[in-house]
Length: 140
Image (cartoon, rainbow, N blue to C red; front, side):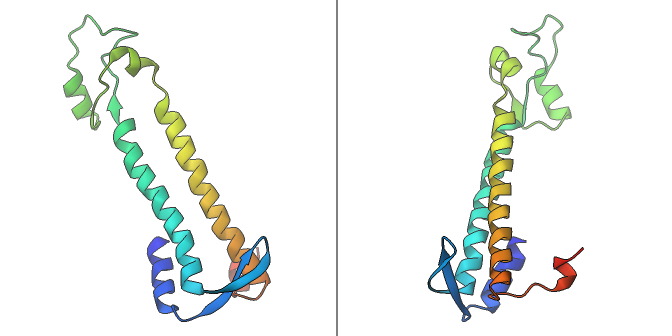
């Protein structure tokens, strides 16, 4: 999606369109600038996901219910075999941490918000005849 939008923006850099604020025409803008505004938001979302993965991909196995285990579990071996990027550094935190759930849900919510903003802009610009969406994509 990002590459396709960047290609379309590059190929249409000279096309002007109405820029809207609160559904009111505000000033002329480049179509490419409008399109890349949505790409920019989605690129931030991709960056957030890349930053989230190393924090979430830590192995808590071998931490026991609270403070380790008495079975001599090789935590580093388990983490490597299961594809984790490392170990949780503290057994208590490792067994109760839910940050990864909140971080993922925040990322997911924000990404969907940005996609929704893009979809809403496309629908409004289609309705106002600023862009054309083929009926093949707009009907059931």
